[in-house]
Structures are given as structure tokens and as C-alpha cells.
Length: 110
View 1 (cartoon, rainbow, N blue to C red):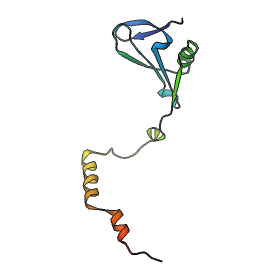
View 2 (view 1 turned 90 degrees about the vertical axis):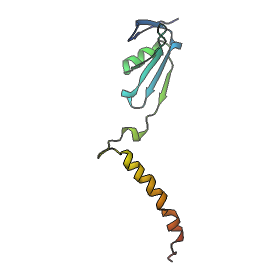
View 3 (view 1 turned 180 degrees about the vertical axis):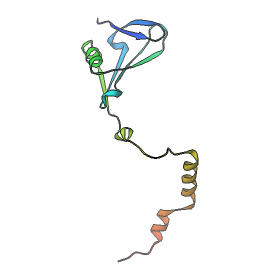
View 4 (view 1 turned 30 degrees about the vertical axis):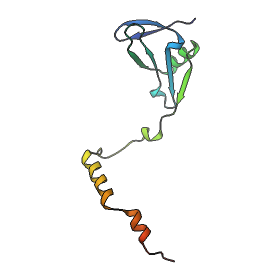
């Protein structure tokens, strides 16, 4: 049986089996990570996993789960963030303006 040594911020170095470790490999490499439940304090520990760590864990028998990060999460946004007032104004606008009903009642041009 393979023994994997990892560290818990509370307990220090702990010994794990491949079944104790979850390896999540992301399509955007910097978001890949591995996680485990510390056998001593029972806290969930999550650490980044670069290519070297992924290779070590896979060679030790940890199955890798691949996940895709949505493209929207990587978009660079400009401008100020939305506020609660912006959201409230939008919701109130939806209640007073029915663009679909207005478009349905518009005369058809041929």
C-alpha cells in the first residue's frame, strides 16, 4: 500500500493512503488542487497542485478528477462592480417594463 505524506496546518505531517486524497485537475492549471481530511483533527485540508504534485499523486495511485473552469470565470472585467442598488433598480425595472408584451403588441411590418 502506498503511503502519501502531506501536511496539515494544525497537526503537521500526516500519513495518507491514495483513497484518502482527492485530486482535482483543472483545465486552467493554477486552479488544480488536492484535498484530504486530516486523520488527526478531522479538518479538511486543501492545497494547490502544480504539475509536479499532480504527477506524484497520480503515480502514487490517486485518481485524478478533471474539471473545466467556465470561460466566464476567467474573463477580465472592467468598470465598477454591481451594487445592491443596481440589482434593486434592475428588479424594479422588470416589474414596470414588459418589453416582451410591448413587442408582441407592436404592429407587424411587411
